[in-house]
Image (cartoon, rainbow, N blue to C red):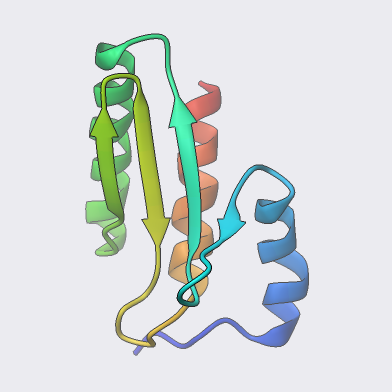
Length: 99
């Protein structure tokens, strides 16, 4: 079973993500980020690539897309908060955005 992030992970990996544009959700233990692209095709392509990784992890984001923006929220519902799966998927999404 997946476990909630430890205090050490929150101080390390999570802080790195927060320094890279992710923010803490105000209403729950989750992280959020808005990615902006040049157009809809690039935004949708990013979502398609991210979906393949999410499926491999069996960890799926809450997200929406409007034209060139993709808004992502990551939370592990099994622990009602953040887990290493959220950190891993956030890191993957950031790498995909850079490529």
